[in-house]
Amino acid sequence: MPSLRRSSTCGIARWCRPVGSLFRDALLIARKDLMIEFRTRSAFLAVLVFALLGIVIFYFAWDVTAVSAADLAPGVLWVIFAFSGLLGLNRSFAVEKEEGAIDGLLASPVSREAIFLGKALANLLFVLAVQVIAIPAVSFFYGLPLAGVAAPLAAIAVLAAIGLVVVGTLFSSMAANTRLSELLLPILSLPFFVPIVIPAAQATAKLLSGRPVGDALPWLRLLLAFDLLFVVACTLAYPFTIEE
Image (cartoon, rainbow, N blue to C red; front, side, top):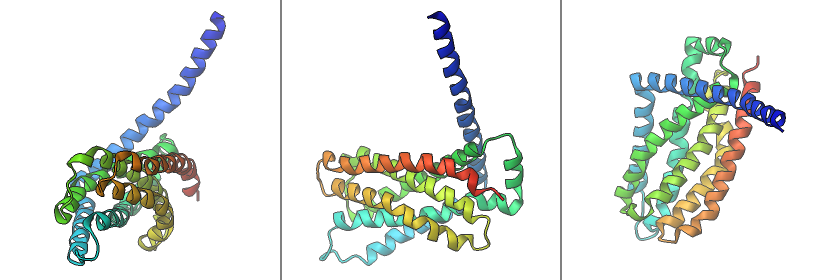
């Protein structure tokens, strides 16, 4: 029995060590990308301006006698997040491709999976920062109180952002190797955004229309299932997308 316990403990330790190294390397990659963005702020400001401009345009095109704010706002919110996210994700690998730094990154001892997870984590924080400003802006323009639904709405935003980011990061790495990356990324990503945007919009609509949080739970579970599927599938697929 003691030998069996020692063998089991050693097996767990051997499994935990590469996983810990994977996440440690991913955090370093994410930190590097966020520091680059913090110094320039060019992508963040461009995406934020696009999101706020979209909210304002939808507001002035809104016929208040035909559609209620609770019916319109969820669609506006998630259409804007899907398209503004594409703007930021397009730069995920483009900067390193332009400077030739991607070759050095791939030649480093960091695993391909860690590079992908680090890029996705940096993009996730980027998208969440945009959401923190855009969601209150939608509440302000459309007169929707968020106080009672802030926590479940934040859960929807985080789950949807994870799905959008992992899919967008994977296709950004593929599109960065082409001369038409700005055109190719939306074409590849948008069909895979649909399973994320629809549950997010449906769950948001349930909350903003005053329905109980329990009515949004099936859509939240669906979002969580898509997130798990996309995170695992995209992480495993990424090393094949960068092979020559």
